[in-house]
Length: 80
Image (cartoon, rainbow, N blue to C red; front, top):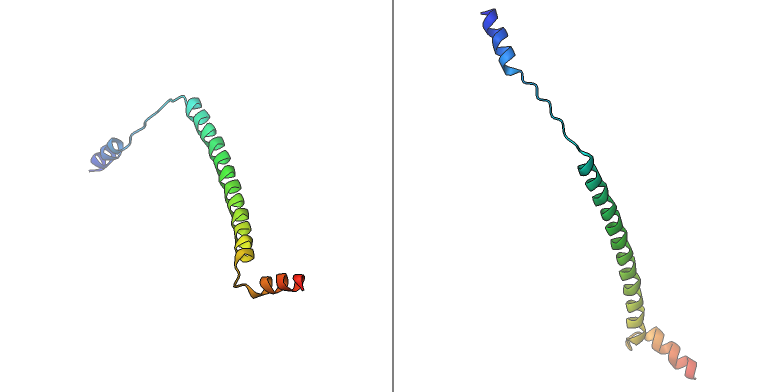
């Protein structure tokens, strides 16, 4: 019986050796990483520009809105 268990254990073990040239894959991953970094930087710059534009648009809306009493009062007082 001990011989059967030992044979089963030997049959269940498998050793695989793989040799591969990974230099092209690593170079590709590094190039991808550079592109992702540049894309992330561009996305952050676009987001910042959008926020600045949004703030400018809000200030123009406040100036153009005649229902805003404080602005119209200021303008009226400047002409008095």
